[in-house]
Length: 124
Image (cartoon, rainbow, N blue to C red; front, side, top):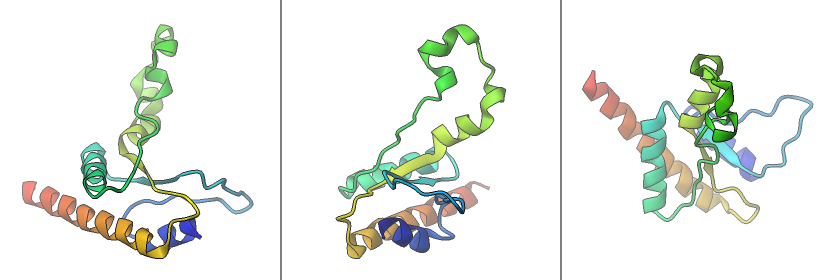
């Protein structure tokens, strides 16, 4: 239910998770993708300011972690991984979230994205 509401209400605002046909999700997290690190970090700060928890679970790609240092991976080999580590944010996701709480999260995301877009346009 929470997944469905987030997906419906965030459509066209941010990139949302897609569950391919024939697959199921544990729904442990609901992770959205923003345009860039600045947009993601600004949104996370605004959520925190309003007392809404969010999390960046993967801040450092595996190929950049100490355990893999000896392999000297080239960043260009992991472009998608690098982008995702900078742009994804997990929203509150639990069975006790009600629609009003979900709506307040979405309203905040929508307002913050609008501000970020305006800021980008003003810099152009």
